[in-house]
Amino acid sequence: MVSRVERGPVADWMRTADRWLIGSFVALMVIGLVMALAASPAVAERLNLSTFHFVNRQALMLIPTAALMIATSFLSPRHVRRAALLTFAVSFALIILALLFGVEVKGARRWIFGLQPSEFIKPAFVVLAAWAFTEGGRTGPTAIPAKLLSFLLLPIAIVPLILEPDFGQTMLVAVVWTALFFLAGLHWFWVVAVGGMGMAGGFAVFKLSPHVHERVLRFLDPDSTGGLVDTFQVDTALQSILSGGWLGRGPGEGVYKRILPDAHTDFVFAVTGEEFGMIACMALIAFFAFIVLRALTLAARNPDPFCRLAAAGLTVMFGVQSWINMAVNLRAMPAKGMTLPFISYGGSSLLALGLGMGFLIATTRKRPAADLDHPAATEG
Image 1 (spheres, rainbow, N blue to C red):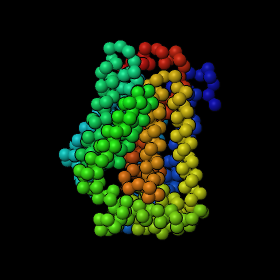
Image 2: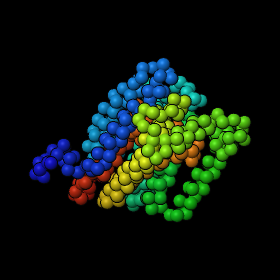
Image 3: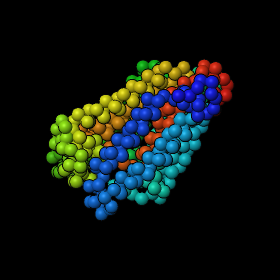
Image 4: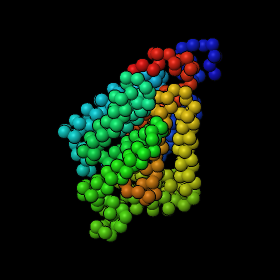
């Protein structure tokens, strides 16, 4: 408890930050560590690493992740925009460097200096797009450039992702941008037009990219292209979940994780189903749903247009990424290389989520109307 008469950055933060969101994110980090203990030892032994190699690295990465999330949540809306702009610029430059000099892994160049910069560009893009849509809806000399910027941001962000190629992140960024487009209150004609362009773009990728074409065909009909190579992980993940039944085999008793290559990253949800059961999976889904609904409620209540739109966009990004990961594990869609937020192993993913959810906490903090109307709160 903090006295209402006490002033200072920490005291103000404790009074204004949403404790349910903070507690939920910390709980997800703890669950992720538990699932790393369940899923990663089998993968580490298969790769001739120490049994708890991935567990130790996950635990170490949680410290800077939590610190980054808390530090970012102290930012004012103006500083959130500036931090997002800096992050976007650095991430964009690193993606270009990865395309030119990065090591090719599984047919894609996504890594540079031990980081995956496409993870960091997502939360920065959401904040900048929210700012552009907010400014574009205002009258005055900045309206036309801001509207133009809101449309230019999408190709600027996704073209390098397509070149990597990283179609999972491309789809996520496009979905979030479309959601922001809709939430900004633009005419239904443009919403339908954007949806049509998205469908046309997806069809073009399907036709022009042999990798995507074969993966989709194999997902729809594994025998159509002569094998089960591209569906092995999603098929095994689904069998893993089904084999656990309602209550699971028990912690550490999973079998399918020993043959599932990405059991500790993209398919940790499948390990949850096998070892802890369908009830645990449904509880995890409900927990993610609670976070999304809580954040959207806080966003809707926010009187500041930028904070309202940015918080909603960050929430959509978090929710859609979670949904894609779970859908892949349930074989409802082809593998996308998308992590389960705060639960899947991955340093870049954890740090980027810490940054993004720090932005979310910062934009959902309770602020007096006087602070929002003050020129210093809206400039930049």
